[in-house]
Image (tube, one colour):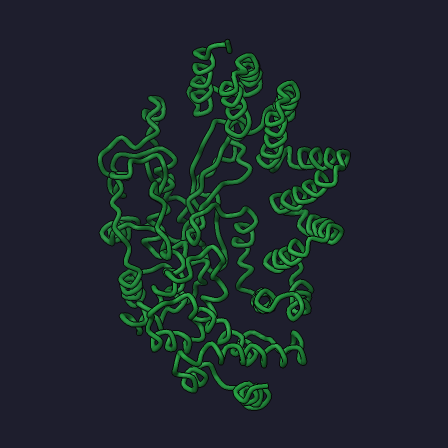
Length: 550
């Protein structure tokens, strides 16, 4: 072992250094790569000896592991300030928050550059609100979607600005110091704070909301209905905002439809320091929007403005860290505030170590994480990555069967595991098992999560179309309509009917398109004034205008 490693081993086995001491002892970036290699070697040796008990939150093992991880982030940076990187490295809470929350999909170089700029220009705010700094960096490391906030308003009508994360941090720190937020920001986690900062509205919009929306946190769900519903707009089919400006004051003055009510409530919540979620979903009559908000640290209310009679199986929100849809189970876990528990933090630390070190050094730590938290999804997905990489079919089947059993209460996760088993069954030519799995997915989700069943059925219909089996596709399509009669017209129309009819028209199968549409009209029975009814009429027009092949 090299001399530097021996010295580090002595430190680890004896008086372990603090994170700040480490950076003071290693001020030169030229030595960081070698120091990291040595530190990793010593860390593995020490933890191989101590096992999971040697790696506890806020213990010396975690301190050394997080230093090792943070040093690895330096490789993403070119020409950056080593001094600012070191100063950030000394901030234990910031480093932990960043490393616990950063994902493979994040643009690490951009996120780190934001943190470095914050450290250079707003060191006091970074020290005071490290988790807020991390949330801003992980949200604004990539551009927001061009059609933010939703597709039912012209982009030019929304009063957006280019967000400077440093300025946003300073502004929010000032508001925090003046007690103008519903929560103390230091009480919130990164996963909560990212739903507070995820907007490009100017402070003039936020300030208007802070002054004019006076609803208390405990009854904030009422903000949705405080916007007058514009029935005339809906009756006229004006689903796009028809006015030149989409300011919060304009929405309050003119009223709006559900998407405007949900947007208003979500933005007003963010202005007042309440993390919020903007949901869309398909119900019996078509699309709908509603919102959710953080009622207390770790406790979310996710059905504000959601109509129970419309039969929505689940809403779709967006994760601002990736600008992709949030998984249903993530919302479930989010609502339960699981990440605030000591058990979660311990399982997260063990899983992070296992993922970083690989199966040989990390396997026992992953076992410990799952023994402590049997439903800790990150640990399951880490093991899935190892097993899929190994490619041993029997091991893969055993793992996904265990996964399905463990997550049987969470329909989306259960289906994802069943789809893996289905893929394996098809790969080995086991038609009977494949058919059984397809049927199981359909039946088990027919009521509460029919959106998953519709998606699985549409996939089966699609496979038959790709194979040129239009007779089989039509049979499967009709069977699906019968299976889901009386359930979520929106999901059924947009998930199965419209794709089938449009594909049939594109393939010259006008007879199949016409028959499919007539069958759908009998099953859906959508009112002419509903969103589904209008979409159905438009699709019927397309079928009438289509010419038979030849």
